[in-house]
Length: 151
Image (cartoon, rainbow, N blue to C red; front, side, top):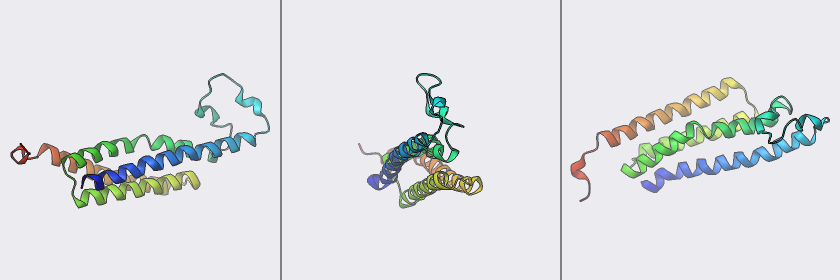
């Protein structure tokens, strides 16, 4: 089940890269529509967050979500690797796919609609799946029977 456990993590990596690419047309499109472009030349070496309040909020939503995909999911990657190494079960794989599906739904909701109540529900549900996976990783490692390890 190692490959099956790593597949959801691989899909989430690809999804994170898709969201990264989504930022480009969103922000550049909003910048192109700015009537007063002088607001962009304030200082050299500007950062994406400098666009907050300059371009429409919706144009920044993909960037906000991209940041979120580098927060909680980093724990998911570690848990996925741990479970893949020690031997994931079918329940772990199912939970991993549920987590990824919820994170993708969260991304789409945040980028396209961004109503906080639904976004929070999706975040909470994915966090519960991640907590269960993390507890299972602890159980699989801390309570592993070393006598059954290969010699």
